[in-house]
Image (cartoon, rainbow, N blue to C red; front, side, top):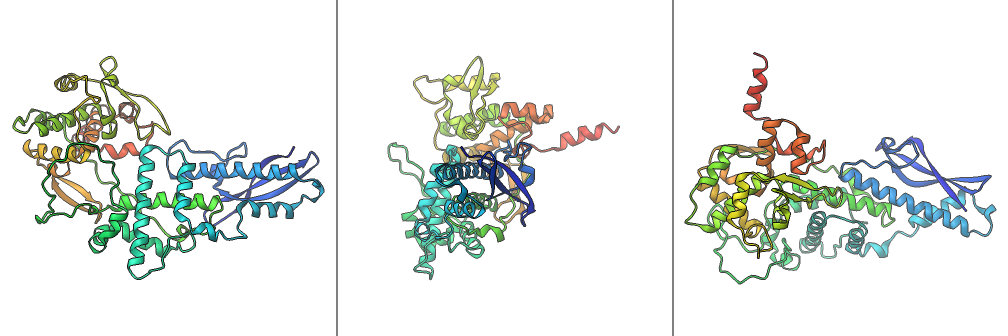
Length: 466
């Protein structure tokens, strides 16, 4: 039986990666060395001659897992071919090179397969165990690529079809521009969005309600289904997902073309996290909204979220069974596929009162929720009614410029999570302790986006100099 171990070449490519070499034993006294075509950074090559996978989820982890899986399949293929060979004396370096080419099949450029670019994407999604939110985000990208293909056809390239072969850095720049300004495309070619809608949310079967039209800042009616402007962070995130797919396609022999090799994805930049103080949260809770029960309900849900610190997607999943010994317990949806940990947050008196206020055991959810869009809209209105209008500086994700806005304009469901984290961090200043309540992993880079060093903390630090 053939057996294989590995080594890494000393030579590195322009990306600082070295190629993995297969050292396969044909028999106990004879072995061959085969170039795998798989390259990794030496810092990700372990002492036991294998790819080491970082524990922090992200693009690098996903890419290395793909390479590790490719190496495993390649090794199994080579060993099987050796075991099947009738004349072992014919197995040499040339034989190994032929088998590598057969594995990747570059000799016959996959023209037939390139016709089915989106079918390969479906294969990619089926081969990866993505969390619900990651799968949803990738499908957003797929719909965008479909719309881009139709846009190119309508905009002077009638025979254009998106394929691995025609992906170039220039085409990626066109895709980037398209993602940044789909509103213009929608107004010019609205029929594209009938075929591949901007939003593919599944509507809940509820009685039809006549809703007032949505108006823009100038008071004009916004056409139904019109895309919202994307920030540069969102576009960079989408292109990063696209790059992960292309690298997977290269590793799996669908293409040898890597357009991202000479294309730079923009950096993801975050502004200072904005959150409300405990005093502002209490003022919001104490504001009389009895004339608008719906707004009062959404306000109460927001305050409860400020007291438990969960994401809105986790909040919507909570039921009365989530309450265990005066604490809320849940497994965060965003990380349960990669790192399923149970977060337990004790309930204070205010949180318990809010639960009791809406107690209805026949309901499947902890609170009478509405859509997230409705929730965010009512939160802004409640902030305005509570006169939470202090001016804050935020980063405009379209222009990357600092802009000043009243607090109620930037209020959203995620501000509740930032409020929970920011106020507790201000008291204890221990990210690991706060992370145990928010569900962040110890040492998480994402945690830094939720808290900031505010003026009170700076004054306290300066006080140590007296």
